[in-house]
Length: 124
Image (cartoon, rainbow, N blue to C red):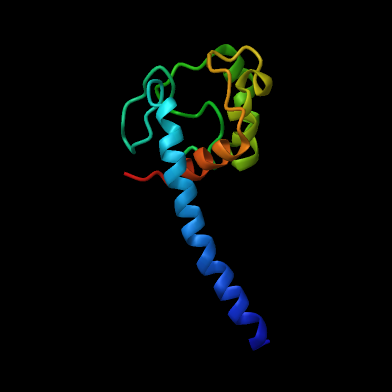
């Protein structure tokens, strides 16, 4: 049993810095989103909803934001997790046709993963 503990501890120790690097890269990649979205807790909505705490939340659930009819119709069935966020970031209109989000998407999978890491734990 003890022979498995050291490799597991080493793997976990390596994972934390990698996640921090992903979040740092995600913060840089998120710069293309800040014109429409805020990420700080309590910050106002912009053209798009505030994304603080988006991971784990149902789509279309930010109070006070005026969502498109398409998001209102389909959003409640979607929970934003890494898989759904990856699909959304790749091509929003493929996830919810008729969305008012006029963003073509992020074609690079590594960049999408970094943005999702940042959304999980925004850095100042």
